[in-house]
Length: 120
Image (cartoon, rainbow, N blue to C red):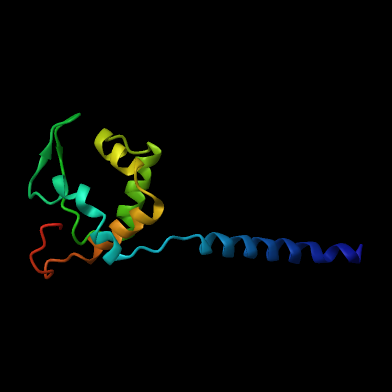
């Protein structure tokens, strides 16, 4: 029976190995790359107090200064259909995970002190 005492250690080692693989797959956003990818976002998200009226009246948020991971997660949820706005879902469907991370980091880098930037 002593030969089986290594099994718990093996299970812990396997768990740590798989956790390392999951972390290696994490996508890192790049704000500079995001600059070239936000062209479709600015049509709605760069207009102060803009309201979209399809499918319902919806106040469109300004994204500058928002947490990059939050934006990437929201885009991913639109792509998966977990968030239901049809326009956002169609836009997110065309984005890769890297695109979403880059867009998130671009908007996270925009602050009140950022020079006047029409893409905020």
